[in-house]
Length: 281
Image 1 (spheres, rainbow, N blue to C red):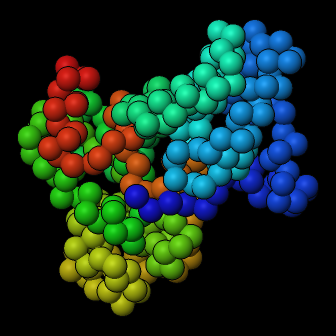
Image 2: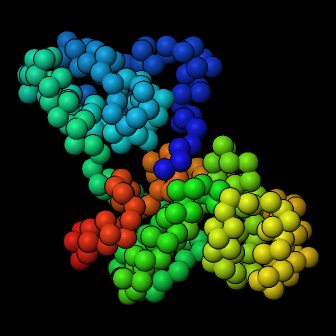
Image 3: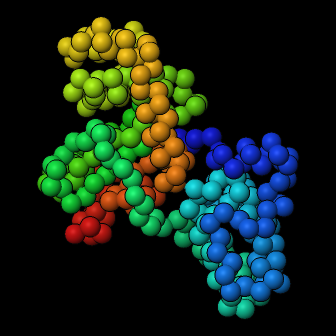
């Protein structure tokens, strides 16, 4: 998975307080301290400040909660520390339990969130019981590889699954924003999925010349298409989808939600199809 820049709270903290600002934060985002006495809360917070998050960020647990609020791993670890503190466990016992929880990794599915799909490109039967929402970047190598896996999932579950595509171009990919806006300009002419397939087939080249060639290949109204991409008609829509993704917990691409539940596992048809048949039967 390709990761996005760190969440906004990190930048706010740095600008206002400096690099160690997270150490001064007492009420960590997403951590429920209810039931803990002042002393137990302090002790639990010290553990969070001392122990590392296992999501791969290199941060301490408390640091990760402040700098990358959507991270489900640091949230799970912090919750484990709070629960053990409530149970009266010693710091040593809490750390031992923390290691066990960290070894388990994040849950395969997060709790469901609401994601609007109005006006978004969708493929698959309207009656499908499973709606897959994908936040993706047309210049992301992992997203490119996921295309074949998603098509195989839909081949194996043709009546059960439909796919909704959301734009999430990463700052680290210089042509991703242009690709996202071009895809939406193609959608306006009823050719989103055709453009989607061409953009990924030509990965990683999202140059203007290449995409204009795709527009002609798809028999789009090239004059209209050119005017819309040059005027950045869909820039605000792309930004809105990025914000929606961040609010739902997206920090990298591709990120998939199954009926609103973020999936944290390996994205292959072999891994996903049995899970979908089990979890959403």
